[in-house]
Image (cartoon, rainbow, N blue to C red; front, side, top):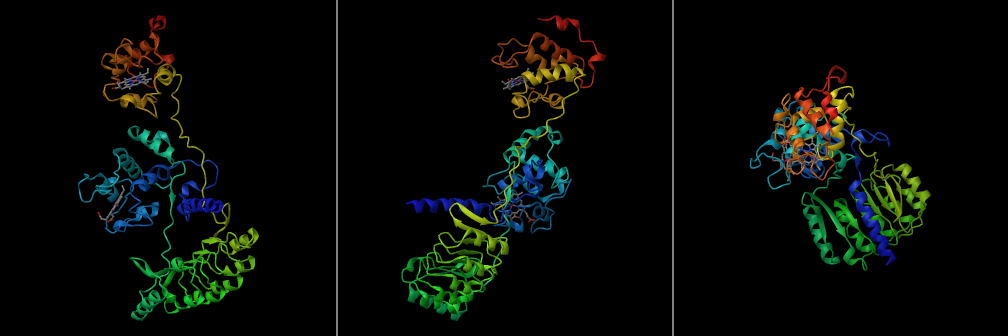
Length: 476
Ligand code: HEC
Ligand code: HEC
């Protein structure tokens, strides 16, 4: 049972590693382990594309011959002659044209029945293209247009590491389909040995064979039957069979092999001589065999090897490390809690702190008297994170843009301004702001807001150059 638990541990760790294998973080995030400033592309645009597009346009599939898991590929475009992205011109960019078409248009992306972009995500992509489609422009809150700011910040905070880009798969050796003579040989082997030999996939005529159903009987002589199709085999699983060092002579003829499982067989160091020339081998499992460091050293020519399992063998950590010096891409598993070699690169960055907009000048009426009121009593509901009533009060710009009423502040006319009306209403009125269970404005603060609006709602008037009516400060 302990073994099972260990196995499932390995499995989950493997799954995690598989997810990240060959993974590299976006270049903008890999430069050193200290806090790295977020970028618009890496922390906002790429996460949107990876969530909604890369499933069909990535390393596994390239619909329309278009991939966009990296910015280089995104810029390169797809099968059409259209330019996917024209920096500064969303109107000339095929990507923008496709995502902004009506949902039922045949050209609309993503296809109608798939997870759609939100209107904010479309606006973000447009903004990024129109501001130059840069790969490394830093994300500075002050530069983001007000209507998308909250969404941009939210996406960036949810993606502090950017996205993990899967390396495009090495297509591996190309093997022609079996000749008629080979087909005949395959049919005979299948019949005689009671096994199945299959093409790897619909698109790949290379062959895969597993002895798992006949492992108890399967031996060197049976393996020798595969010689006529040796060059066609890409994957062979001989785990738990009776295959020995002698049998591996047949394996040495399988020059296109990419995956080989020999765990729990009688293979020893002597047999590994036969594997030395399998230059396409990417995966080799020798778990539970008699091999030692001396045998491992014979694998130093397997330049494509990326995963090697030697758990429960005589191989030492030192021996494994020696091999990683020869094969820098390999990750060697020595047990459920021990691995040496190239680990997927994961660099944690500090939690994103997007620079706050500069505080307004405290010598001005707005900066010294008005803004502090909003900061203290309103921005919890009307700020960068939340914008109740579509209103933000954390900057003068946002305040003047206003909220859903579109008459939040009418400069010079407090009587027409929602802000003055709402704050001036009796506390039990439904429209009163702040809501009645929240920290309320004082009479002075209410009067100050009204006076500031009537004086033109300006940002730059200095307190020293103006006269705040004494009556305001006499209020209780
Ligand atoms: C469910 C799969 C799927 C998803 C998800 C998807 N696409 Fe596509 N895409 C396709 C297919 C299929 C084609 C080819 C047919 C066509 O041109 O309409 C295509 C073609 C394209 C093209 C044209 C490439 C060229 O040069 O011909 C662009 C641009 C594009 N997609 C952008 C996107 C964007 C941006 C997203 C994410 C917002 C996305 N796609 C999501 C399936 C998908
Ligand atoms: C606890 C949350 C909360 C606080 C604190 C709060 N508000 Fe609101 N505010 C809301 C909600 C919810 C709405 C939208 C519903 C509505 O219109 O009543 C709103 C709407 C508004 C509107 C209308 C926007 C428009 O243009 O239509 C104004 C003006 C406003 N608030 C001003 C303020 C001011 C000024 C403060 C601080 C003194 C404040 N609010 C504090 C929750 C809050």
